[in-house]
Length: 507
Image (cartoon, rainbow, N blue to C red; front, side, top):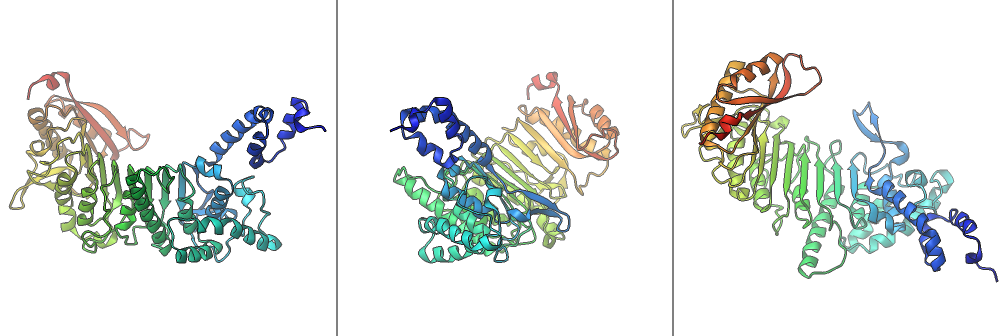
């Protein structure tokens, strides 16, 4: 009896090209000949999967009425369909390295299946028909057949939670689909969650709980040296964008910091009303492995921030850009003491390991004390608002700034000159900068670069260029915010370096 393998190779290849890709790998295991013939097709299939699924982000459009991006109508159930595709074809999950989560409407008006899965992920769900009209009930049953077994196997949910989540998934709750995806993407390396235009939702809290449980499970398995694959075990990078009008508890951050694999965490728009944080609430029970921690446009409780640093013994880079919540616009006393309290607290917690510190955007000079940086042992790079020294009686002076900076500083000192500072005209800027350069020459022999960011015209830059030569520095670079280099009052970064003769002079 004739066999498939008796056919000429050319004809066999033509037949194999028509086999659905999900059946290609089982076919290749039928014989050595089929494995050899299908190998090029398998490689091409793998490359296609890698291209399609390495970075997963739903298609969006600009919604002018809402002034933000919105889902295309045909893609509103994108995360649920991705979950089904990953569950149906396990290899897809192994290719996903990056996942973007866009918060719009988590409950899709009870319409969980009014989509065309093949349009979202071509060929990944061959058993589906287009979920429109009369086909809707068929697809609902198909979704249940896929989702229910996967949900029952979850190691992060209780039985009661599984029943509740199954109902939520059926009505199109996308955040629940994202939470379940974390258990089915074993090589996930990076996740971006955008809640900028979404309220603080119960569904996001459930996602946070799943992350906390994944962290606890990982710690347990690591202590037992278990080889079992765990949720989020390869997740190193997390980026969170919050709605600044909504208060968020510290657990929305610490849940991710508790993951043993986490190395980079960036938060934008985080608002934590000062005094509302309960000391010790939400802190992880084990030290975090975080290396880089960034807060942009943030209004954070300083106690909470200090506690975060206490649990980051390996932190190398820290960024905090203040972004005033409307409740804090008039709180000048909070703005004035922000850096004064924040920087020493960071020094006590991570001064033994921190190499880069950027704290600015407070719209006024940073009034720091003589011992503000005393605990920083390895700080190489510093960026702040213009520093003025504050004495014990609350007075301030512009001189002596370099004397309080850490001696380890050598990769750069950058001033963020963009706010209501006591130095309003260029002569004051010149006096401050020249005085700082002279002090650096005397007490900081390792520091070779000083940068200043502010609203400077071309004439201002030329003025600073000439004045910097007096203490033995030179203007090495000017980076403007736009291409018009002759505009007046344009934001620019001026970078100054010591001249070779000055750099060789002993301190």
